[in-house]
Image 1 (cartoon, rainbow, N blue to C red):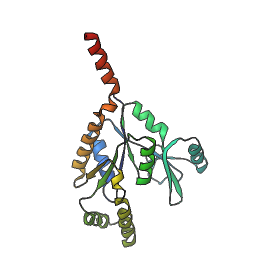
Image 2: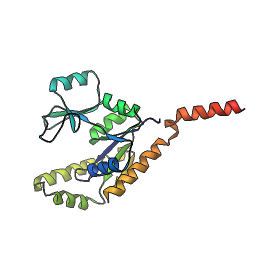
Image 3: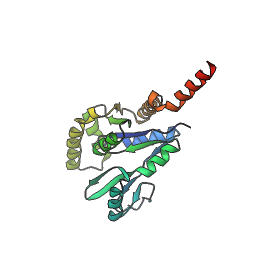
Image 4: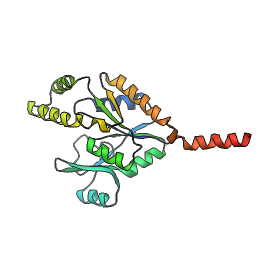
Length: 206
């Protein structure tokens, strides 16, 4: 059984990265979405261990001290982090673990694990991104302006990523994402055990 790949998916707010990930999970086996820990209270529809691991601020601080997070950050007064134990367990089971996180968290993970592929999902154009945000019908003009301003900042960081995928169609983008991860699996540095076995067999034949 091959070991899973830990990879990060980021993108502008409204680009549809969540939809792409859902399409990937629906169409292909062997993937799992990482579950983050948070100090915020669960919403009515959320379940502990499904959307998030809901923990106290005290426990979150303890986990920071224990170096139990791959990355962590504070947003709008609440803390969020990716537990290492959950990710490591899934990797050992052969699962490809998707970390759908922001740029800052992605770079934290990349610093700790340089072989982690960073994938940034972009729209066909910024005008299309604006239209998608407006089309949601859930955002005020002020919030849309803030999200577009944030996209401008994040665009400067894309060059720090390994791959970029255009989300012109969520299903097609999910297929390209799957193909990309299969290519990562084929990297020589990820197949050391198989290569050593082939060398052993070749030596025995000689």
